[in-house]
Amino acid sequence: MTFKDLMEKYKAGSTTSEERQLVESEIEKSEAINDYLSDQIMDAIPEIKNRASSDEKSNAKKIKRTMNRKFRNVVITSVAAVVALFCIVQFAVFPIINNSYYNPLEGRHNVIGVTEWGQMSIDMSVFSELHLKGYETPFVLAKPEGLGSYDLTLYQYDAFRNYSETQYRSQLIRGKLDNAMSDNALISGMSFNWLQSAYGSYTDMDKVSTVDGVSRAELSQLPESAQVKAYLFFNETIDMQALAELVKQGDVRVLWAGIKCSDDDTMWSGRFGFSPQGKYIPLIGNAYDAQLYPLLELDESEPWGGADVIDFTKLTATTYETHFKSLLKYMAEKKDFMEVIGFDYDYSSALSYVQNNGIGCFGVVVSGSRDAIEAISSTPAVQYIAVDDVMVSIYSK
Image (tube, rainbow, N blue to C red; front, top):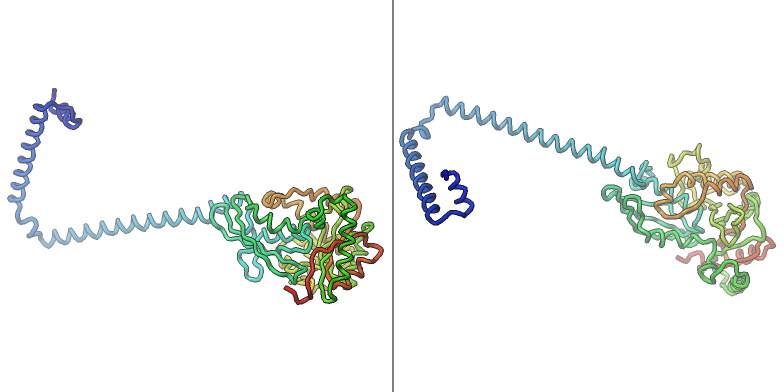
């Protein structure tokens, strides 16, 4: 056995007592020899440390400076590489990954200085006008929180209650929306009337007649100052000319008009409509392609829109028809948004139906004084009324 083999056994702890003593004896000898040689070297060159010539010192300084420069260059190069990598990830990789999912900030449409206002605000504004009866959701502010993730704040306004604001918080994570937002912010305005949740089946005419009778009786008992929100269901659909005339009367505010978009649509199952008096906060500026979607905002001549500033005398049947078709066309092309919020509406079929059959309104959501609501509900055109909300006066909050 060689000494190298013996050392391997020693390191492995498998030597006998005699073998271990032999190895440790050799190690002790080696240490003694190394100590002796070290002392001899130091004794032979005692002046090296204390008598370095000026040239040697100069050379040492040059060497040091050269090493420092090289070190600095290495550090600078490393930092530059890290910065470049960060920029590539931040401005190239991240956007590619983010845009592979629905991006609520796409386009970053800057409205009144709000940098967190983007594509989802436009999409939600159009969606809410089509489906939410008397509610508007014009702002969805999004804050990036990582790859494909955003914190969302949705602002919803109740057009009946003096545009009182409710904020809903949610998260959008790689194209998946927290269901709490949909449940809280959208469902409240999705049904055309509240009969289903309050009384069950839409088609039970006895229950419908009961709601109509109770609503009319309650109207007569309200104080004169009361403000009322009600659903009016027509005996038969009215065209856009008749709707425009109703809006221009001004006795009541028409918050939403339900539109027949299929042969199966009735006043009990209506899913589509629009706001014939404009929205609280419109889609302003270049937020959408006005040539592709003409009159997506009902009155494009009013940059801030809303029922308080729109001149209703300018609104015609053609205006309403163009506006409603643009709403349907816009949403038909927003499949990514619809996947996010989880609703499955066939906007293309609805658009084809109104293009082939015309646009008919089977009911409206209105607000106004007690007397105004009583008067309009007593006209021959109105078959049923359902009171949905009441305020003591116009000053109620």
